[in-house]
Length: 169
Image 1 (cartoon, helix red, strand yellow):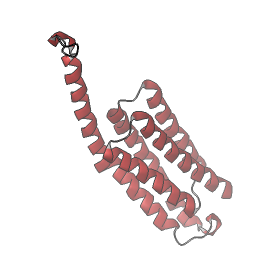
Image 2 (cartoon, rainbow, N blue to C red; image 1 turned 180 degrees about the vertical axis):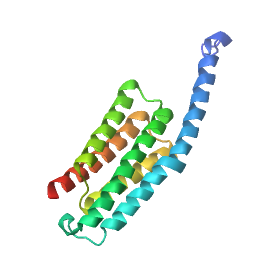
Image 3 (cartoon, rainbow, N blue to C red; image 1 turned 45 degrees about the vertical axis):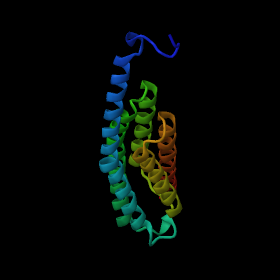
Image 4 (tube, one colour; image 1 turned 60 degrees about the vertical axis):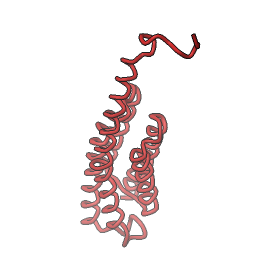
């Protein structure tokens, strides 16, 4: 008998069926992220970029506009929270990865409350980070570590924007 042929009970069929089921659930979750949370995030980032377009520097932004920008950033934080829930479902992250994502969101929320936004270049960079993350989910071609890394890069840039804005106002 060929070594590659194993008895049926050694094939791990239960595991294979379960893995396939989880893969399907992950694909469904990825579709949700693509069509809902990350798409809304992209939209909000576009609104923010458009709002900042006329100004060359943070100091040029009128106070009335600053308040509206803060509202948009608050909405982005909320949307990131929703995305975290979908990310958790999609990549079935380890407890540690989920904790990292949630800690990132809490840091971002704290920064928003302090006060927050920044230079156009930072927003364009953050928009690109978001696009990278969006494409990674859409393609489902990255493993959990790569997705988490992309998410972390996005968080770092958003936090950087928040702190720059806080220092300049």
